[in-house]
Image (tube, rainbow, N blue to C red; front, side, top):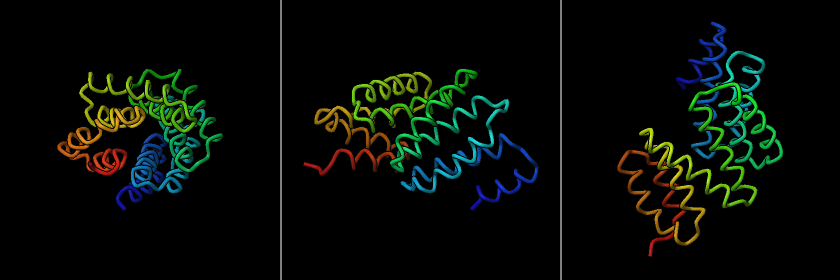
Length: 185
């Protein structure tokens, strides 16, 4: 597709951060489609490309994306290492997007490890911050994930969150919220 063509052109120009950015986008798109196996390679490539460079925020974002891809692929130990490295990279950056990506990956890791309270707290923190910054897509995603972790009470909130996501054109998020809510009635 278009992303793959852009990647070839950027690689030819040796635009390290731009190439890594496209690889991160490809990985996030694969994750959104539920294709964890397809997400790992571009995320890993972005991490490798950014190692030891001057782009700490981009490296943290790549590492968080790799951690999410590995978690989705069932590779928890390797995901832990990727998340730890992303946190290390994040210490050298004050960028918002990488910090949010690391928090998102940490919330998914906590949920995968069975620590629902920690996962819920991280999602709720992300939701508050995103709402405060007007980042409604991220806020809704975090609210959906937090509600899903609150059991029956939270599941009751999911239909309204699905409707809010659908109203904003976030159809994949709406479908996820509906799926997490379970059958109606």
